[in-house]
Each structure stands twice: as C-alpha cells, then as structure tokens.
Image 1: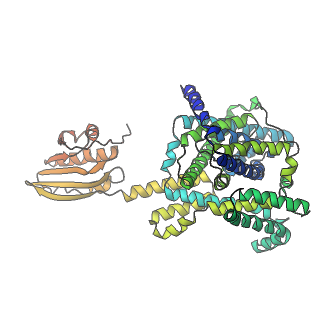
Image 2: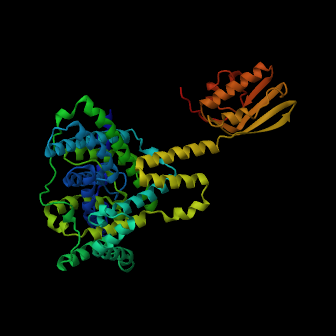
Length: 541
C-alpha cells in the first residue's frame, strides 16, 4: 500500500515541472538566479564535506543530486536543497565512532569506511523522510509558533554570518592571546579580502536600484573574478579550498555489506533518525520562511517525500544527506528565481561547472562568496522581530530569544523542539484557569463555568466548588466551558462523587455527547439540552 501511494505521488508531482508554464521573463530570471546559486553552492558543499570528515566530492554530489530531485518533486518551487552544515554536524559523531571501532585500518581505508557509514545513514534517513511525507506528517510544522520561527530565522542568520569567519582567520591563529589581536592580524593579512567583501556587498545593495536585469550577486562574482584574475591579485580562491580537477559525474556506489552488523546498526539507525528529523525541520522551516516572503503556500508533505528521495538517491550515488538551505534559497528568491527551473538550473549547472569548468570555479575569490553570504545573513535576519520584542507578551519574547540562542550555540533541531515545548508549557499555564460564576435559580445554586477544562485547569476547576456549604440542589452549567481531555472528564466524575456522598442533587448541563459517553460516575447526572455542544474530547484510551 505504501509503495502504491508513493508511485502515485511521483507520477502526480513530476507533472508540475512544465516548461510551458513559463514566460520568457520567468525563464531568464530563473536561469540567471540558478547560475548565481550554482556558483555559491560550490564552497559551501566543500566546507560541509570537511565538517563531516569526507572528501569534498561527497558534498558536491549531495548538493547536485538532492538539489536536482527536490527541484522537480519539492513542495516549494525555487527552494534550494543540498549538503548543509546542520546535517553535516550530525555525521561528526558517526565518524568518531567509526574511527574508534576500526583502529587497525590505515588512513585511506578508514576514510572509505567513514564514507560508507555516512552513505548508509543517508539512505536510511531518506527512507524515514519518505515515510513521514507519505503519511502526511509534514503538516505538523504548523505547531511551530511564530516567535519560534522568528528565533530560528534570526539564529540561522547569525550562524550563516559566523560560518564565513573561518575564511577570514589569520594564519597560525593559535599564537594570538586575545580576539583583538586576532582581528588586527586578520585585517593585516586579509585586507584584500575585506575590500572584495565590501565591494561585493555594495554591489548587491545598490545595483538592483539601477537595474534588475541580471542578479547583482552574479555580476559581483563575474566582475570581481575577472579583476582578481587579470590583475594578478593575491587572495584566497575556491581552488585553495580543495582540488576539483578530478571530479567526475556521480555513479552508483554499492555500500559495504559487512557494515550491516547489529553493533553498527545500533549506531547508524539513531543517527539516521536524527539526520531525518534535522533535515525535515530545517527544510520545512525554510519553506515557511519562503511562504512568508512570497505569500504563496508550499506543501510540507511534498517536501518531505522529495527530500527523502533525494537523500536516498544521494547515498546510493556517493553523496551525503542534506536538506533545504535557507541562505541559498533566499539568494535564489531575492534574485528572481521563483520557479522550479531556477533550482533545477542550480543543480545541473553545479555539476557541469565542477566537472567541466573546474579551473574557472577554482579562480573565483572566496571573498566574493563571503560577501554574498553576509548579505544573505542581513536579508535573512528578521529585524522587525527585534522592534516587536517590547510589544510582545513576555512569554513570546522569551521563546524568540531562547530559540535564537540555542540555534546559534547548539543546533536547529534542539532549538525548534525547545521552542515548541516552551510555547506549549506557556499556553497550558495561561489557560490553566477556569472561572465559575454563581447565581440562584429556583432555590438551586448554579455554577456557570467559563474556560477550558483539561489537565492543566483541573486544580482550578476543583477550587471553584464548595461542596460542604452548597444547598441540596446544585447545577453546573458547561455552556461556556469545554472539556478538552480525559483528565477533565475524570475531574467531573470525581466532583460528582463528592456531591453524591454529601447527599446533594447535582445536575450537569451542556456537555457534548462525546463527553457524556466518557463519564462513568457523572453520566446519570447529565441533563440533555437542545443546544448541547458537539465538541470531541481528546482521550488516551
């Protein structure tokens, strides 16, 4: 049944990539912005490969394969996916375990063993993501509250900026005793890079005000590269990061079968689950950010399936797992790449550039790419959220700041989960009160309740009643209240038992049929009104 649904999904979604839907202007914008993104993807894929402890080729293959598949099947046209730092970080622990588990292997054999563990983990993580998408669980991203989303965006903007700092670090940084000395040395050694960065940022800031015919980032890359190359200016280039002269098109890789042992799988499976969840959280939140920027809603479930197919395929062809890249996605979006053709162009052009034009890619100054990413960081940061802080409820402000800090210091998955938990606890606390107004009605005391009755408000509910001093006939009216869960139903049963033992007549009004069925002790004391509510009660049975 799962495979039938999956095949039906693929047949349906591949029809969305239809070139006939494009105008000439859209095609030009998508192709040019895709070209810009392709160039910017190269150093990031290389850097994330180093983080994971594998060859740069692994990150480049992952960026190509994942980007290609998600461009066709993804839930948000124009969203860029590839090898990412948040996923690469998860592989660090896996690599350390492999090195400890295989101490007798030489350096080359150990590197290959780490690679195959990463490939298998990527395949399994992709299968988990496919299952989540087919089961339509992507919609749960809606549980992330707006303050947590702002915190994620702001934290990620800071992370993007901080990720550029190692490119500016001076040589032999360990010999400096303070950050001031490091900054001084950085300016002395890399002043040319700073000039290029400022020039790039100025180009991206002011060129769109003159003309938007070509993405400003692409203009900066071409112009700066030509100036540096023909001017024989000494500065770091992409070629200094890695040797790209022997990169070929990806081919099928058969994972080592001797890895499939019980001991190994006990490490691979938890890592794959974390990779799957981190990838989905970052992808779905990136989708939400682009939804906010563009006003059109994407499909979380489609993105789950597309990412899963991309990661599984990447693992089978020698690439590492990845997810959506908010920085590159924002570059694409702001450069006019709003359709699937933009992300498709970025993926295809990436592999063509690396395989066929490696010398050209190697000549691009690192500083121009750092400048572009700094502008992405500035554009990603939600400055309006800072202005809103003083007007927000304190709980929302706390969530925003907390998620931002955790995103920077820990990782995205922990930050988002923490934000959801904090928001849920705050919501439960703020709604953990139920109010009762009393009145006399034909010699009876009537309690008119107002508020939700659930596990958090049970204590407040019990405090409203004076069983000992109440008259012989009592009515509890739930017309303005709502029983939310089984804890609320049990509280009603418990209160009814207290009135019964006190020998007093109790009547319960305006409970839903669903709630009445759950009541054990209080059932016979329920009145049946014509305007009884129809809500359902969440039950753990």
